[in-house]
Amino acid sequence: MARRASEDVLAAVHAFITRIDALDPHAPAFGELTVRLGEEEVTLTLRAPVAEAMVEALRVYHDPRDRGRCDHCGSGWLDDNFRCRDCGGFSGVFGQLLAERAAGYTEPEAIAPLSAEPGRHARGAEPDALS
Image (tube, rainbow, N blue to C red; front, side, top):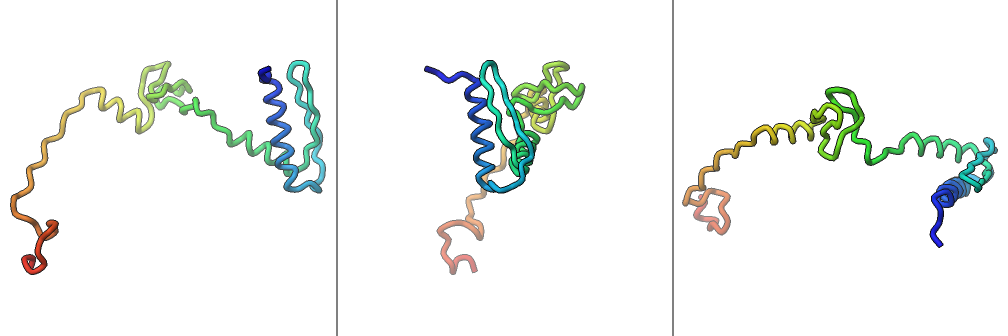
């Protein structure tokens, strides 16, 4: 039988608290945290280090779907190419590069061929031939 999403959430919270609490089991209690999802509920004691770790974890989480705000209209709806879904503008350095390329890429001029004579750093050159 597959686990329900609520079981995964409750198990993850419990595992996080247990893992951090094991590092300092004698820290003072901070309070209790009760999480209820549907019919399931779990109440866990939070010690100060666990509470601090939980706050830090929640603050630093970054959703990979969040690509920042549009440089032009301020919307938070950038697609995988950093193009705003609201105004259509490209954002950031990568977005600017894509826009410039899309506007008209011109092939750079070819580099002139190397001369037939070996230079001073040519491979296989005899040491006395370089003097």
